Image (tube, one colour):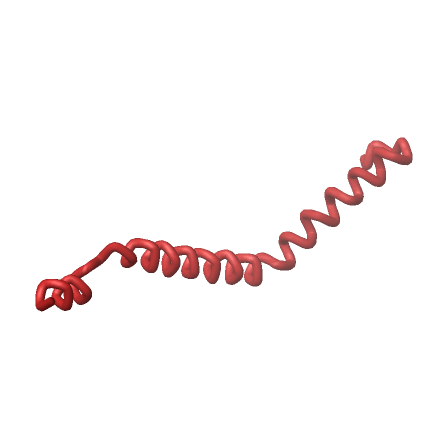
Length: 63
């Protein structure tokens, strides 16, 4: 019985998944922060793509 109780406190089998979860959480926060900081640049880039595609559909070369 004493060995079983000791095993409960020293067992590290589930520790790896917890660490992966923490790393994934930190990565998610970093990605959200980067998107928030680069918001205007991302919007400008997509607006440029939309303008290029719209110009291609109408036959305008965009120049």
